[in-house]
Image (cartoon, rainbow, N blue to C red):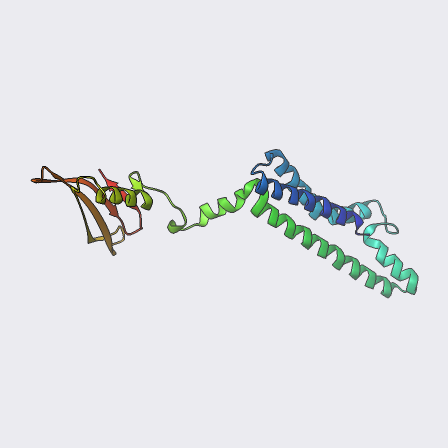
Length: 211
């Protein structure tokens, strides 16, 4: 009775697994196949309802998938009440298969389809400011700053001075925040001190070099 629905579930699950493994292992999957798999998933969900509508339209009350349990129990027990038990079993069986296919389709569309584009779109629409990392124009990495300071400390002429300080400023909403400065000075001819480079770490944790 449920062989057709289970066959659609198996086909959809097979393509689901193939797309998932292909994306994980090969980091590629044809875009058109994503759409084909999504339509297979829609068909797997709607298949029991379509079969019910077709059986009713064609008056397949004896051999239709939705009516087989009803007729089996009614003939076996020779009672319409027993046939109703078969109808209940058919309903819960089909409903369970629809829920399983719906869960598989939901998981596929959210996490696999187009490499999780729907989930990415949801995060972009509902994410907070801290969710996204957008570097500033002069932002540098921590490793780069460490490399610059190490280079200044191990200079051949030992003519660099590194200082750091912390200042308190107010952000755009009026809250007091701390900003850290790292300044590198160069000693010229053992007489003059000239500011060589300056870096700052703002209250969001971004490291920037100030030209």
